Length: 298
Image (cartoon, rainbow, N blue to C red; front, side):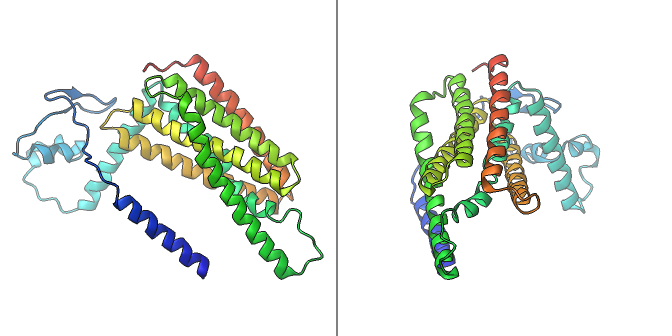
């Protein structure tokens, strides 16, 4: 129970720190009188709107805009209208990504999650490495818990150091620098996973864990910067939603596959780490080809 209490307190402290952040934030406004067309969607005018119901019309689904003659008809199913609007926005977002050469950038986190998703499952096995079987069960459980905490601490160290080391080599005005760091991050994850499959001492397990987590942190940040750089303001929310949804799905699949390979197939944590390294190598080659032959203009 004490661990859960400490976990809850950490969330409260984090929320308090965020609440104390000061600043003046506002949405980026498009040029007055301009208009932008989303692939497969109607043009939406930008600029100030008169208070005559135009704002509400723009926020309604496209099907409603096409039936202006029924505007006096009462709406009896708000949930259905929200579903139509959700479907329209989802289709617009997918069509928007398909029409852009940088659309595959939403798969960067997806590919990274395939590699690091099983890490939490494997950390439990690695925390038991090197423990003496002659010790009593209570001593082994306490030692394993301490080691698991140390492993997660090194995950945090890698996530903290990775982006700091990569930052001097990236520039928002040069997308190729962000692409290069994303590619290097896959190399870092592959090296870290391969190291985990080869080392034996717990100290080296911690080091390789940091190498792997540094790569995952770099690709998470730089892939988000790439999407923010290229996506238009009115589509950025949907683009990021697809990005995070794919990453979450991939991470869950990786964790499930890692557990099944250990429990059902009988593989060791080292064997699963080697498979993760192979996946990292494949993604490294695939994204290397993409970044080389598909040039995205800044």
